[in-house]
Length: 493
Image 1 (spheres, rainbow, N blue to C red):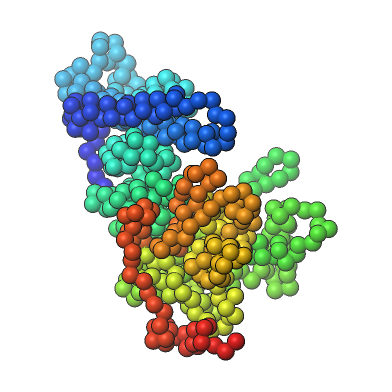
Image 2: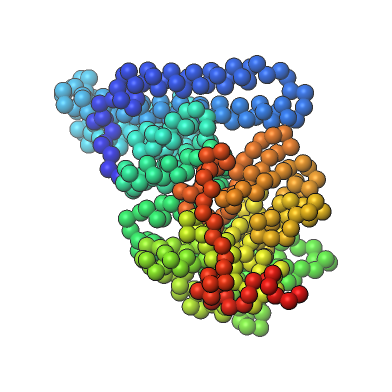
């Protein structure tokens, strides 16, 4: 996305002096309101009050970061504009000696990179932060000011976190103006209610669909840069780093985890990390196990949306479990060599899995396969533990009449099952597939299924959320998908 160079925009703020006064009043008033609320709170006498004050403090932190971003972006703009005007007027140098020194050292004081470097250095001094940190903050600040004004407005009000704002700005790079607006429209409602991790995952999916280059073209470009590197560490240790295609990386990790569980021995005093490291070395150096290496490819789960594949294979994306979107061509290459397939029916509006074929598995295994594809990881907000490290959990407890079905189950790791069953955390399944979590002290957060490909049909606000048309898995639909066996309720028990 093309933006007019810094120093040539005739504004202070978003649209001149008057706008700058309004903007400043809005953010300072919002900060004062947060401070008043925090100041009015008594010394906390219980955990619930502490949680409420932490929420206000988090909002205030976002507002302070928004103010810092505005000051950085406008300060740099003014520094560039001042040097530009001085160059035009011929007043760059205060005296002849300064001009001679500049010519001698071949320094152009009006050079935009030099002005930027000088401003970053000055800002780093007054904020007592490393220059690299301030330089990174300035880049984000310019993105908020010039690319993503709606995101900046939400940050000023403290409605989103700084991390989510940074992710949205980063995802907006190289997009067209209308695409940036669409990106904000889709991600901001999620950023107001969900974790930073949720925003990061879905921002990467949206960006991948919007970039002008096809997913396959971007993958082929980066694939040419694959490498394996190593460097020495202290005390006789070293690090090995591999930059390879995501399916192979996930296959390596999943296979190490599988063998770690297979070799688990109560008398083994090694940690999980130590066992994985030992297996890694054994596989490559000693040819263990007998197959001269681990069977990696079967340990990869890839979701391939058939409709997108048929429309445009180059631009469509598949989803690699534990990683995210990958080019369709790479997914098909992996699928061609896979020993078996798992057929999944996805919702045409959101891309979320809604049912799974039953050709080879018992119903209990079918449900586990379905949850593995739909949830991708533990469904507690911010938790990324993989399906192999999670268990099927009933949203409405089995003891209270909850059924074992895809609408009443989700993946939860053991730690967060304990949160729900022993520490008072509550969860509610929503019609759109999301889960509303409520902490013991009333904090509510939305968690979306990891497999969602399109956020446009999701609204985290249950009041505004329209009920999307549901898809009934009929016998006719099953025949179209090749699921020839009848549904479980018609099978003889």
